[in-house]
Structure formats: structure tokens, C-alpha cells
Length: 257
Ligand SMILES: [Fe+2]
Ligand SMILES: [Fe+2]
Image (cartoon, rainbow, N blue to C red; front, side):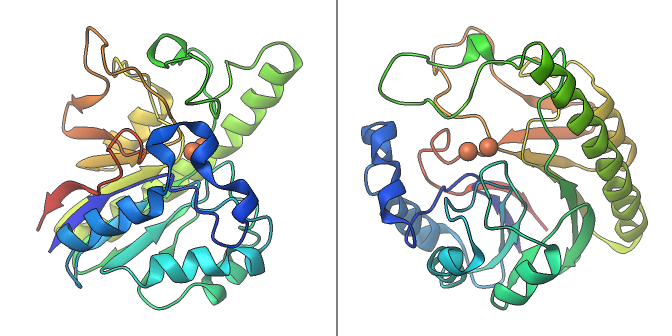
């Protein structure tokens, strides 16, 4: 069994006025690119991690065509809520609406074929900045705002603390469930650390839970000409940025078990 990652598809089958084309030529018809690469790589029993910004829909009803489109692709899909997933109401309603082989997690853990996967959305983290890694030229991009300041910084800190509590619970569940699993994977929507992999309170918790990989998205329009690579291996954990534009819209292999 193989585990792949592809985050932030930002689908809009139910909200065609929100198509991603305006974010640059790479996004034109991007679901077609995703489906082609996905079908080429992913087998029926494989897993694809989709940690957030799944759909532009505002309601579950609007999100249905996007969820059905994902469900029709091969493999198990593990979904997490991103900051743009307004359609994601309560976890119970989300689970009732998504089809078989679609797994939604929110501060908890799921096990599929000996792979334990757990996580939460997270949020902007004080001291972690991607300002220099983003291509700010007009045209592509525009979905990642600058770091919060003033009142927004205080609000962001409050949300981050709440999310850190959820991460703690998710990682406790991962450590517990992971005892019988061949592999433990953490998923977050926001990166748990900066591109330089300096330790944070989030990475401390992820690594203490024995996660071999941590997969996340949220960042878009990253520069390809950076002097030092973004993310990678830190101790026993590989930090994988899986935003679909970063991956050229093809699921990235994370692990084979
Ligand atoms: Fe996104
Ligand atoms: Fe996001």
C-alpha cells in the first residue's frame, strides 16, 4: 500500500464562479491535471492525504459535486479542514455527507490498512514566516496573506493556542493508535514550522507522537529559486509540503508500507 499527498485542490464544481483560473495559468483546468496524474499513480487500496482547502463551497450541498469528484478517484482519501473550507460544518455532518473510502479527521485519528493518520488544521504561528518564500508578483498567488499584525495577531495567537490543544489530543490518539500500526502520519493544514525546520511547539508534539511524516498545505505560489530547500527531514520526521501547485498537481508519494 502506498500513501500519497495532494493538498489544497480548491475545487469549485459546485461554485463555478470561484474557479482558480484567476490565480494564474498553472491553475487553468487544474482538476483535469489532478485527475490524470492521480489515476496514473494511485491504486484502489492506496491512501491520498488531502489536508485542507478542499472546496470553495460555502455549504455542504454546494460541496457535494467536489466531494463526489474526489470520491470517484482511486484510493482512500483522508480529508482535513482548511481555512477556506466554509462548507465543513460539524464533523458528524461532514462524515455523513462524504462517500465510502472518504475519511474526515478533526483532532482525532483514523487507521487504514495499518497506517494511523491524525491531525488538525492549526493556524498562523507567531515567529513562523513565509514572506520571503512566496512569489508576490501580481497574477499568480494572492491566497496567502501577510503575517497578521496588531489585533489580528492577538486573535491569531488565540486561535493557534486552541489548535495546539487539538494537535495535542490528535497526537496522543496517534501515539495510542500507532502502537498497532506500521506507520504513523501527522496531517495539518497550516505548516507546523517554518521552511528552515526550526523546532516549534507543534513539531515537538508531532515528533513526540512518533509521526514519521507530517503532511500539510496552505502555502501557495512559493518561489522555486530559493537558496535553501523548504522543509524536509527533521530528526525522525519528514515534513512534506503538499499544496497542489507546489506539486505540479500530481499526488506525491509519501510512504510505502
Ligand atoms: Fe489553499
Ligand atoms: Fe489554506
